[in-house]
Length: 250
Image 1: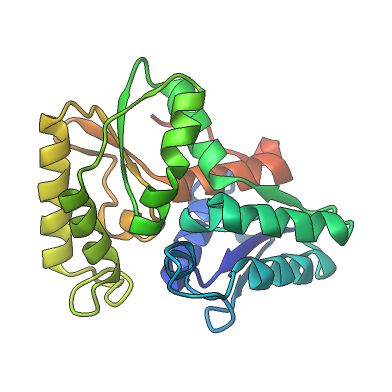
Image 2 (image 1 turned 120 degrees about the vertical axis):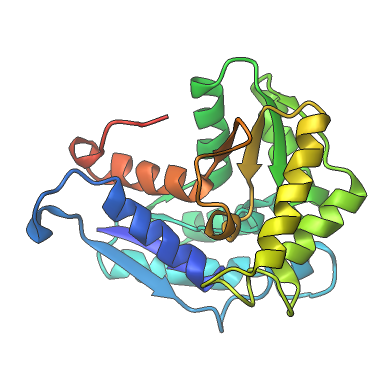
């Protein structure tokens, strides 16, 4: 069975579930794969607040607990559809907890899968990453992208503040208004991407799992939009039953 650690945020887990269905070779209900979405947003502390020192509660503990619940219920592979949760101070603790418990469930690493996808499918891209401020401050994507020789286009502090507000603002942000996403959030994200294109970006990573909810299209003004949610969905299928994975459409 495939597991999804939901609640980070709630719509992101649902989006990955939807994309697992979309990426599965199946013509009947019975041909689809078994999937377990465990969504416990009430148990998982905010990832960005922890990374910025605004909270002492490491969300890794709850994430590890949920993954072990999934293994006990029969899941053999799982993923956490939250980019910020893959920052080292969080994901390292999750991995340590699983190792200490002798867990055998496979945990797909969202950032590594996304970076490997870009490296395999785009020639000499100049990559800009839209993310939470927590993810940006850890240099999470920058480290992984540069490790495989990819050029990163920096997001200025002003643009970063704008992206973070599009995710977290309680009056118009995606976490508060996921379905539908507000026009203000969409328009401000478009402004950010226009600015990044002027800075030389040729590929945009939607580096927060809420962002594909606002930007579901495959590209923006000729720049491919890389959707880690879909990449995670495909990776989960690949690990569980590769014969059920649809051919890649890039």
